[in-house]
Length: 210
Image (cartoon, rainbow, N blue to C red; front, side):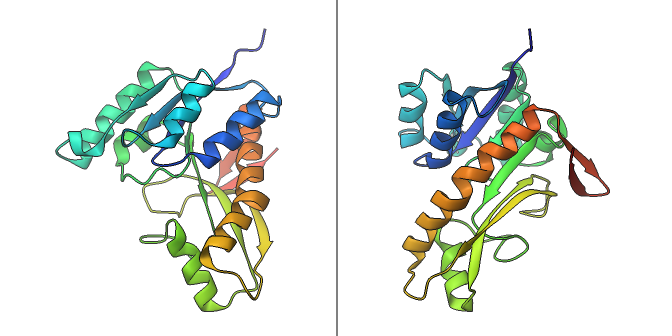
């Protein structure tokens, strides 16, 4: 019998990408992937309710309970190791972590970013800020990127990207919603599936899909 790939999803808010992964798992899209843990960086976020509604164990690790980023990162890495996690998915996780987590899970942490990296990414580009910047620049397409997480913000090897049309009357909110629906919720489960199938390799800083 094929052993399952244990997935932890890290969240800080409503958990729409978590829901996309839950739906994908329930539809059999994740293959042997199993969401085994949801970790929230603050209590009371709706993502925790989504976990509870679907019988997924969850844990709250509030950043303010730890004095330093290093203390927080150690607690997070220890939690993930205790739960024997194979893949860590950052799904709107807005808390800074350090190399203790990256070193514990090399090439096993992935993130979804709501733009076509290397555009509109890096420090300060999160949430609606990404879409505000894209509209300010007047781009005709934007989209989403799933990438492997490295210590440098949004700079890790790219797994999948999907472009989304920017419409003349878009607001940051309408663009955000379209990118979630047409790109993020599709390519994040797809990237997780590829990982679970053992089809992703990192060679010379780039992801090769077998």
